[in-house]
Length: 237
Image 1: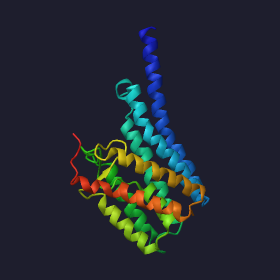
Image 2: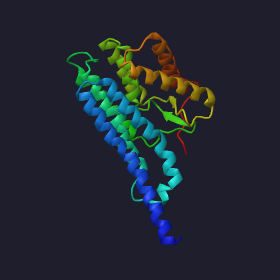
Image 3: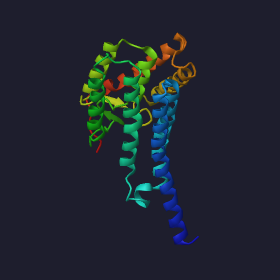
Image 4: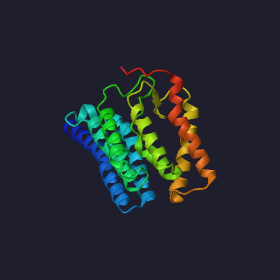
């Protein structure tokens, strides 16, 4: 194989990985279309696929050595652009359109989500040395999914939005379930249960029975709260 041929294949592979990441924007658009049609379970299903893409594109990028082969295009920036759409923008639209916020005050709380998340995505120290994230990592897709399932009152939802937006800037740790070192095995088991409960919830059109909601609530609390045991966040070097 000539050096030119090998180089071309590496370049093609790098572009393919970036294209795979960028497909998350298409999934976000499909989720937005479903939200406009008020098909909430379908919307969250598209967001779940986008989450899956986000979960594996980094592994593909490292395997293809994208940073070395295609340095002109930043995979990190591309990932953040797509994530802001799927983690923040579409779920926030659903939160407002779904009537889960206090009537007449929707824009205030939507703006709080969007602005705090924009700051978080621009934070150069968002990642920690412990394999997690510094502050609440703007995973509004998951939080708003829980709002749709458990249906707290509008002002309870608003209070949760305020607390989580403030936690964006707090010196706490939220773990990355695939990168965390401590309690890794337990965390992966909890994540698997959470994923299965979430799938069952989507199949039930966001109205599952207690056999689903109880494990969904318990695993969500674990994934959001276990990082507090790690103490204050230290930025990754």
